[in-house]
Image (cartoon, rainbow, N blue to C red; front, side, top):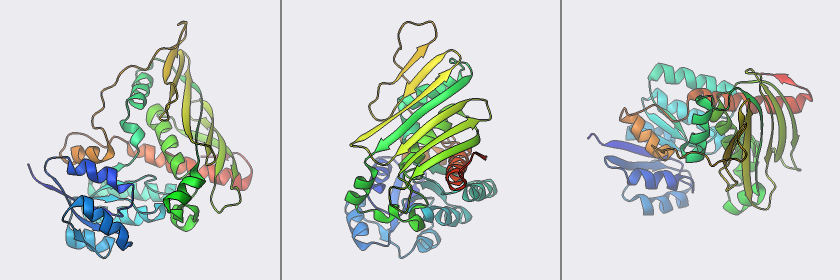
Length: 328
């Protein structure tokens, strides 16, 4: 088995989950790291073991010649680092959001087509049983045509960011957007991952809560497939909660990554029933990357999902700024 050499661009707290998974896999070696913060590199090296430290992302890619990189940098850095990797024949695992706007998403698609490399995005929900079960139910048309969707993601985002010290998330120059672009990206991506729907029109309200980035967002979407939906992404909550309900012609399904009850309730059935068990393989973005490199599969998240996330986010911000419904 050929060894797969992986480098890390950015090694803050989110990087450790990817590191531990990669270290547990046979034939995979984390060989190098770049992070502008010396304390991050020192801490990361204690768990990663013997690794080469690089002075820049470019040096890691050009000199280190990795098979793949794991990108954990601030959001607005993602596009240039994805571009650097792909243009040098390097596969990519990038944390969410992959990019911060639709223009960048389209440019990445062109690069993927040109280079034939792999791009995996750190959307953990796409490796969880309940989300995979709902996706299968919808793909098999067990609910019939989707009619309506409603859901939310809410967390104590402001306090969480402050506690973590990663306050760059409050600066549009580094974050690209606020709670919608950050944690909200998980919710929006899972919606498209499970349903395959395509946004057509958007109307949005945003509360910046006195900050430079969006904190609470409410938006309504009409989809090309004739479904409609209403959604909320909140950065103010005592804890963390999330739920998405999807109504079809033959029933309704509920899914959550936050301990909310998950179920499917078919029309004519007196009670909801638990979601069916779904085998989860691979079980994480890092394992997905390695499986893809070994020819076992395509990335768990289709690139069209990444494009739709970026496109919808663009239109949510545009609708609020213009104060009207915008076409996608």
